[in-house]
Image (cartoon, rainbow, N blue to C red; front, side, top):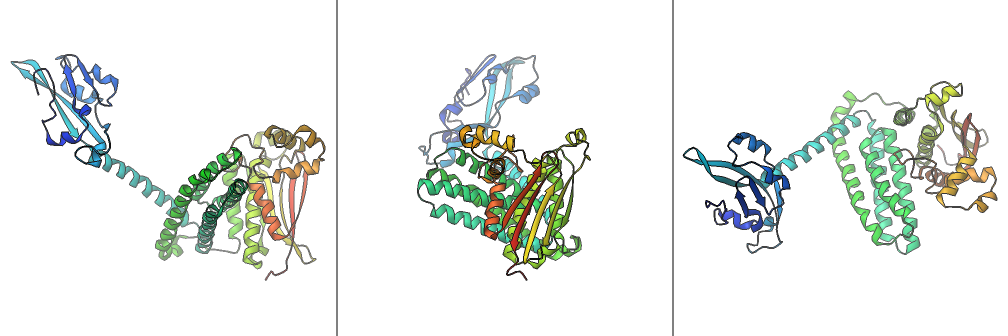
Length: 446
């Protein structure tokens, strides 16, 4: 180092790998000028001011962990030279009790930064695994394994859809179909209390929503979807591994399984949605008949129930204050029941004592969304207006959240009803109740 304060690049062999601008640090009295990415405030360090303690200068030093980027493929051929982290340390050199030089030491702290980041990522992963493990201990193993199997099959179906999509119209249909599948998966995860999967599905839905809202969808737009899909599949594999490791201990910790496991999961879902929306809810359920139905039919009925219950709590049930104004109990009441009708059919019923469906509010939202003109809506009666809630992408929610806003839940309900070959009847009265009644044949049921 010269008396003028110039640091020569030949001081250390390793410095040749760094961009030269990172090493040209000019030091003058009361001023530091750097041509690296260091913050501007570096010039304010009073490096030669004897009134300041050297330790204090070190504490205030902003030239630590500076990311320095150079041209790719430098003369040395070192790829790592393109991205390094440096820390500069300043020490005063005194001659005869007076400051004559400023010694600047440059440390390559790249490895330290990388290790700290890897450690932080490992801590986040370990915390996530612990939270998942605690959730898994609460779930019946059979139910959990069924969810994992369903999730994997659903995600593989999504992958097949992405691979086979072609043509502008087909791309848009693909997005709608994937949206429906992911939303269904999110509902199942929420019912089991698996927040990790619910969050992943919500993030996936956000991406799908942006594609759906842009109008025309191209093949390039779908290129972003395999990334969240792959992450989802990796998490499913991780949970499957955790499940295998916990299998030997599950019997000691898990509550005894019973035939009403789905009803318990629904109750947990209702409470979670109510808490998120600042509401209170009491759920009554009678789903004993569910276990006697074929597996495919059970799965479709569960999907319908989950979506309708989430919709009832998020949209139908009022807040305690709103219910008090209407002389209602603070806690809303929701009922889910599955009963034979005596004519070879069965009825799935879901009812809530909330605000009811408002055709006028639905009409206004349809108009705001640009889906229909006023003239078109004027030609529809209230029944047909209400049925518009089943259109993909339609929602009356003011904000998008994990329980409402994407306009997919009721589309899932409609699709599952069609798969069952069932009939739907909706009854509602403003500020009194809403009831969904689904009738389907028991043919093939055990």
